[in-house]
Length: 177
Image (cartoon, rainbow, N blue to C red; front, side):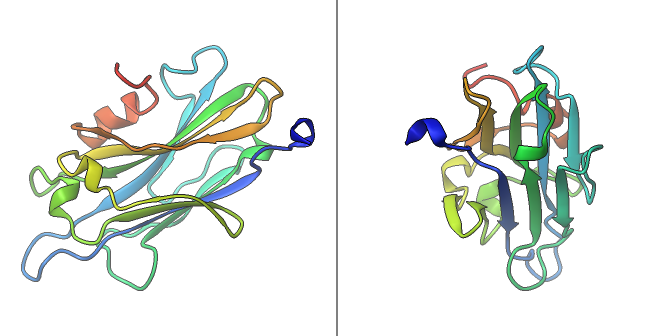
């Protein structure tokens, strides 16, 4: 039956965090997705989706964007329609970065962090980012095409100590680079 698998088609990545303490600067966390082509699967992203934007072809969209973590439920939500991506795209990497406008802030200093990845009603992964508490950015999901061209999920969270601009450039690097 595995030969009949269509792979992952449409996923949602949701991020949540608690607002900063009263009287302090707002904590602003952001979801970001980078797409990578077969020509450069671990190099520079072909394009990025972040800050209330969508991909040029409409297959990846940031549906909800919060700047302070206030509100009920998920603070940021990104939808990825992997099955509609052009065949030249072979990887999509999703990360979370913390805006550093009020000084260096790590995941360990932001209360209530959590990220969830699901396809339909099936939860593929969830994490509270505690394993990357000292990081300012993290890769939280990776999707890649298998040999048959189907999309598969590669779980795992990798932390980075990088400002948002640097993280946008390096989020697709191989682990250990």
